[in-house]
Image (cartoon, rainbow, N blue to C red; front, side, top):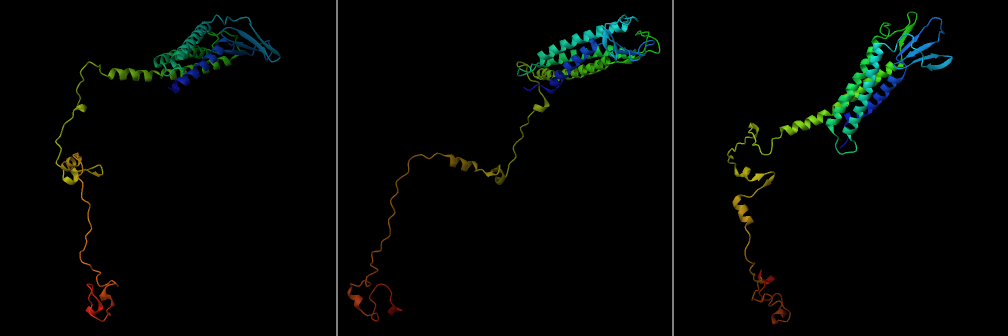
Length: 291
């Protein structure tokens, strides 16, 4: 049996979502802070869930910067850490269940297990979408996410974009795999509809058969069916009656012989053959003198 399209689509989208969410969780790029006073103009700070990095155009990125604003102690950051880690664990569990449920190397996949993996992956997508959306909503709120006052500006960084994409892929992949419940439910319903072998069958109006009398047909119609003539019952019985015995010998037919000599008088060796043709014709055949 070929692997259904919904299973194939789910097995492709779910690992992509896992990779994007893993990058978004570990990368220090949830928020971009720039515009500091008494600092170089090109100075930028990238804040993530686990680290803060400093970057300038003339220098390489330097991570492990000190948290001077108490950013990592914010409630939103702590909740986002827990939800993202939980989402990664749920995604790994969903992929394991999907691998056991799809079973491309077997003749028939396990639809129930594949559908369960879709539910787990869909939940993992929700778990990653909640912190990303929540963080984006309070991005510029300095009471929730501490940062310097104006003229310092905050912007969305690349980790939030990757988090959104990974969450959407997990939702789509989980929903696609969850559609595997449809064949499983169909098989269960089909099994429930079948009556047990020992139970009597219930009557139904669709199973009632009425034996109506066959109308008398004319011989031309009665013995003509499907484009071919059928013999009458009497003729059919006579035609099918086997022959008994063996054929009797028949006498050989003899040819008819005439006892009279019809050529007498026409032969050259007879005495009458020398007579002239004007004389009386003695032969048995007619001649010119008889006319």
